[in-house]
Image 1 (tube, rainbow, N blue to C red):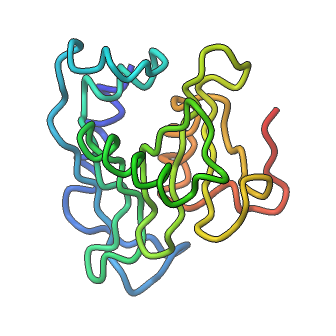
Image 2: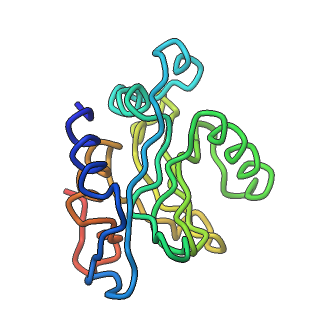
Amino acid sequence: MYKELIANTQNQYLFPKNNSSISSDLGFRCLFHHGVEASQLLKFNFPNELNEFFKQSNGAYLFQDATYGQWGLHLLDLHLIQRITAEFFENRYDDALTGDRIIGEFLGDGEKLLVRLDPSIADFGTIIIVCPISPRNEWQIIEMNFYDFIINYFQNNGEKYWEIQNYKID
């Protein structure tokens, strides 16, 4: 599912590459970690498409600004997911819900990438942008699953496509 996508992206962005729609002065790169064994994923209760990503890459830096490190997405490894999610529940206890997992952090702006993992709720697998100072009712649902998110993020070369005024989830 992700093997070819990761290989193509890694080859294309192994060395910093210009993306004029974000900045004409900076180079952006994508770095992927080694994947994990399926047994390491059992305790996370991730949807299948997220499990498949972690089997290929246990975290990544996507479209990272290679000069200043102030742009891009850090998809967390399994260890950091546990640590950052625990901090999230401690610091944002009024906003956190059972089943929330922080799986990524946007570099430079404090936004986090959250996946909903409560299988008893219809939003299982939903991807949400957590704003650092906004209450939960102002957070934006950007995709119904991780696969759609990562495909759209790659197709938009690391731009925050959900911030485009007319973007909607069908």
